[in-house]
Image (cartoon, rainbow, N blue to C red):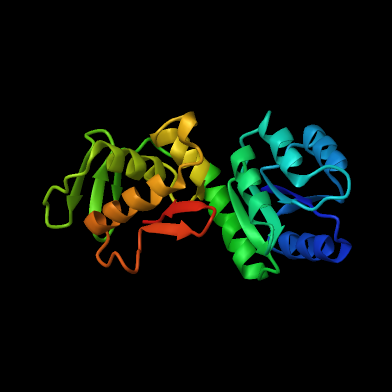
Length: 225
């Protein structure tokens, strides 16, 4: 049974999450503020944490940072629609995903299941296969289903590899810029748009309707297989 920590100061939402998660077999811990959340997590470590950004005592980003300082469990942040900057900060602090308020319970449950699957130990794999292409991470090779090699520039490969190593996980713009270009380029988002457009033209069956390289506007990118 997976243990989930829910951190939110909205009593009704916290109760609804506790009931819905418990009904699906999860053990649920709850906290109404950041201080008690960190204390609870330290005493009874969760397998996943859901953290609201708008907490009454300390900012939700600080809760994410506090958790990430000692645990690698998945962290899903909750945020209001107009709080894009907070979402970016939370992702850079170590959150794995975000859900925008108001949200559907089915969507959140799906995100939870996906995050727990990603966190489960997996056998080492260096090959990622989709319906359109195969990525061989060890050989640094991309081939179509027909067996044709797709030539990528070193930058395009580094972007694809970074995203593919985190399947279905949101990779923030800053994280991707750090990984590919280095810390000095964290704000050069124009680089991402140009190179991702080129990469899509090479790997997507229909670049205008991307299936594998998904943009979360203003936040980051996902690789889906």
